[in-house]
Length: 123
Image (cartoon, rainbow, N blue to C red):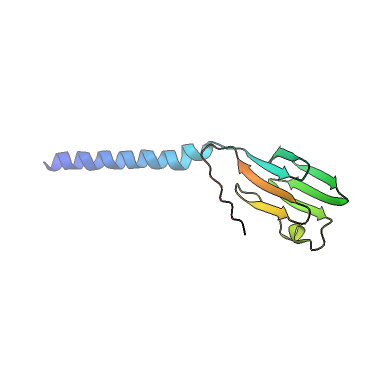
């Protein structure tokens, strides 16, 4: 009976280590691309987060400049009076959002990985 118990325990440890290997090594090696979604009053742009770019938007006398650099996205300049969007810094992870409320411009990081859920909190 002791030999049977030892085999069952050894089998359980083997299954456990195979699952851990899958979670930490195989699953992490699968890379999921992320994209930046920029929404303005006039248009919606989707851009790869890994591709650097600068976007200038002019509408109704307002100006917003958004920069995507080294996997981060942020407001570079804005014509809004309080500059909260510019001072809020950069975002780089799926689900993060930066908004310029006076100019009605939103930057959001989205993941292409299926099943990823984002949490959006509104006030």
